[in-house]
Length: 124
Ligand SMILES: *[C@@H]1O[C@H](CO)[C@@H](O)[C@H](O)[C@H]1NC(C)=O
Ligand SMILES: CC(=O)N[C@H]1CO[C@H](CO)[C@@H](O)[C@@H]1O
Image 1 (spheres, protein in one colour):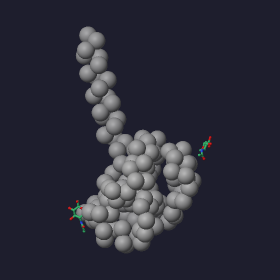
Image 2: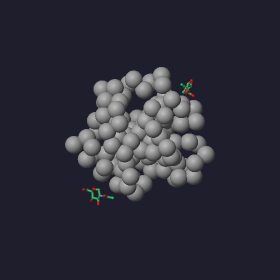
Image 3: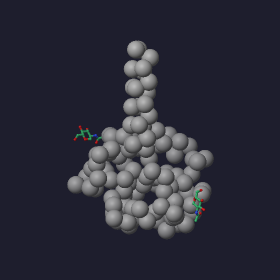
Image 4: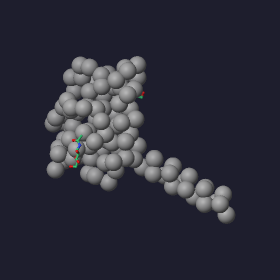
């Protein structure tokens, strides 16, 4: 009885985690953003500030789950063309994209609250 309840809870957690995942964007699926708002983190795997931001960004994805905005990331070491298209000069760079075009650059604190608030302002 207890065991099966645990299993159900575990499955729920897995389902929820999968639902609010940060979407990985590359050239092949960038087109999916063309009619959407998105907050996108451009990063490199070796960059220290990017490693710090990664769990924060996952929280942002969870908090913004259900809002009309995609939370996504681009690995600039694997997909340079997207990063040069958006003139990414340092890592991490966080941009707000409207219909696939750069609308704003995030320059504030890298905390969940601050990023979520900023994103909500962008889509308001
Ligand atoms: C984000 O917004 C909430 C609600 O408006 C506010 O309470 C909180 O202080 C804000 N946090 C930051 C970091 O701006
Ligand atoms: C243009 C380019 O570099 N595309 C790559 C983006 O990343 C994916 C996943 O690693 C590669 O499969 C693409 O070739």
